[in-house]
Length: 130
Image (cartoon, rainbow, N blue to C red):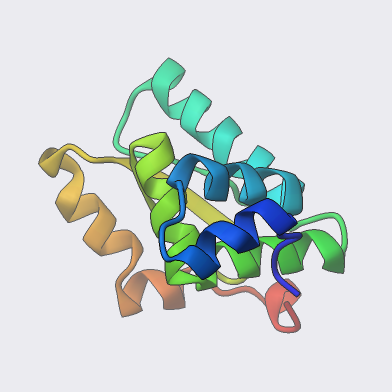
C-alpha cells in the first residue's frame, strides 16, 4: 500500500471531493523519507539558488527507496507535491531526485536532466540493481 489513508480522508474521496492539503499531509506522514528528501531539496534550492537542486546519494535501505518510487511514480502524489512545494520534480535511477523552479528560464536544463542522454550519462555499475 502506498499511503496510510485515514478514515476521514477515505470518506472525503468517497464523497467525491478531497482537500489537497489533507492529501499532502497523508503523503507527508506515509512517505517520510521521500517527504524529507524533497523538502530538503526545495530548501537547498531556495538557499543556494541556481537552476536545480538534486540528491545523488542512494537511499539507506529498500524501504526508503520504495518511498521515493511511490512518491514519484504516482501522478497524483507527484503532482500534489509539485503544487505544494511550487517546484517541478525530476527523477533518475530510483534515487536521484531533483527539484527545478517553475521559472521557464530553467526549461532547457530540466529537458537535459530528463533526456535519454541525461539518463544514460547518470548510469553506474553500483546502481544496476536499484
